[in-house]
Each structure stands twice: as C-alpha cells, then as structure tokens.
Amino acid sequence: MAIREGVNETILTELILQGIRDFQDLQILFFLLLLVIYILTMTGNILIVGLVVSYGKLHTPMYFFLANLSCVETFYTSTILPKILISLLTGDLSISVCGCIAQFYFFSSLVVAECGLLAMMSYDRYIAICKPLHYANLMNDRLCFLMAAGSWINGFLAMSVMIYLMTRLTFCGPNEIEHFFCDFTPMARISCSESEKFELMGFIFSTIFILFPFLLTLTSYTLIIIAILRIQSTTGRQKAFSTCSSHLAVVTIYFAFYGTLIIVYLTPRTKTMRDLNKVFSLLYTVLPPLINPIVYSLRNKVVKDALMKVISKIVKG
Ligand SMILES: *[C@@H]1O[C@H](CO)[C@@H](O)[C@H](O)[C@H]1NC(C)=O
Image (tube, rainbow, N blue to C red; front, side, top):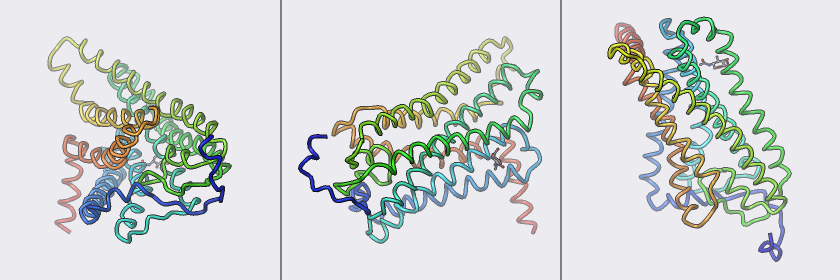
C-alpha cells in the first residue's frame, strides 16, 4: 500500500464510526425510526420463539427452524442497532478496537449461521414437497437438531478463523470507519498490515459461507417450483403451494438480502459503490429480521391460531 508509506504509524486503540455521522443531520428521526424497528424486531422474533416452544401444533421441523431463525435474528439485530441508537443519542461515535472486532465477530458469525439455516429450511421444504413419503423418516428430531446446531457452530467456527487473522492486523489510521458498524470491508480498509491477504481471505470466506448456502437454497426452491408445476390437478398444486407459500415469501425477501450481501462483499470498491453500500447495508442489516416474523404471523394460519390462543388466554387471565 504505497499511499500509506508517509503516514505516521501510531497504533490505534479507538475508532470512530464515521458512518453514523451521515445520519446525524436527521438525528431524532433516525433515532426514533431505528428504535421502532429494533423494538418491533425483538418483539416479533421473541414472540415466534415463544409460540413455537409453547404450542404443540408448532412442534414440527419447519417451525423448529423458523424459531431458530428468529433466535439468530434477535441476537443479530442486537449486535448492531443498540450501538447505533446509543451513538445517535449521545453523539459519541467512538468504539474501541476490541469492541469493534467483537462486534464484527458476532455479526458475521450470525450472518453465516443465518445463511446456513435458510439453506436447511429450504432443504426441509424440498423433502416435504418432492419426497413426501420419506419426510417423517428423513427429517427426524435428531437430524433437525444437528442441522440447526451445525449452522450455528459453522458460523462461529468459520468466523473465529477470520477473527484470528483480524487480531493480527494493526490498525494505524485513519481511525475513521466509513460505516455505521464494524463490518469487514471498512475495517480492512483502515488496517496497514497484510491487508491484501486479509481481504483475499474475506473474499474466499464470503464465497464459501454465503454464496454456497445461497446456491443450495436456490437449488432447493427451483426443484420445489418444478415439482409444484408438474402436479396435474389444480387443487393438488394449490395445496402443495400453500404448504410453502410463506416460505417462498420469506425466501424471496432473503434473496434480496443475499443479493445485497453479495453486492456489498463481492464488488469492487469505487466511490459510488461505497455510498450505495451504505444504503444497502442499512437495508440488509435492519429489514429482514423485521420482515420475517411479520410474513410468518400474518400469512400463516397455524401461527395466527397459536397467537390467538395465547392472546385469549392472557385476556381471560
Ligand atoms: C435452535 O437450535 C439449537 C441447536 O440445534 C437448539 O439447541 C435450540 O433449542 C434451537 N432453538 C429454538 C428456539 O428452537
């Protein structure tokens, strides 16, 4: 990195989340907007976990994975939004290097876990629609548990390697992160040692852990759609479609989410791309965890019934 040669290489311990400054012009508006999004996301996802755990009819692989996804999403949202909210409230944009690395670790591990879970969910629907006779046999409790646990472990293990590499970087400035949380690219940009190797690792990791589950999900749903279109009777087709329509809705939303992730991580970094990245990242960061419970609770009859039962129980005391 030739440009850095003249720079005074003091090692930084504190960074500034410069990206939040862009929102400070409309500080109150952004604070309220993000606060509402945070509260709704937490409420919706915790509600789904609670419903699935406590309501017998929802003890199926599909809802198990859904609850797990909601679990990931409550944590995931909590790695990013509270820090932004506090910074907007206090005007203090600083974060320690350790805090920054920790934030990236949890955020990225949960993203990888989430991509894995989405692939598992699509596999579950694939078996249900394309191999219905083997469903009970294939998707047993043990396998579901292993698949979900595998997604979590995969995420945290993979990112531990990344973090090991990250802790070996020195951050020597400028101490400004051009983003509203500590994400990969903005952090790689301010490091002054071995950052090419690190960026290459980031590229390889995002290919393996984001693109691969994405292709798996895409394949499952392509096979599902082909299978549904092959069904001769209209009622049969409708029935098959209704068992996975909310899934398809969620997955379509996540396709947008994957798309932005891929754009953010795999595209070259020009000035316009950087500005676009900021908007994209805000979208992929805060919207999917909010939309997922809404789609499931509003579109899904079983979840709606469970919710109604709980509400009527509470009302009756
Ligand atoms: C999510 O999956 C893990 C690992 O399989 C499991 O221990 C946990 O209970 C699941 N959470 C929910 C809410 O289903």
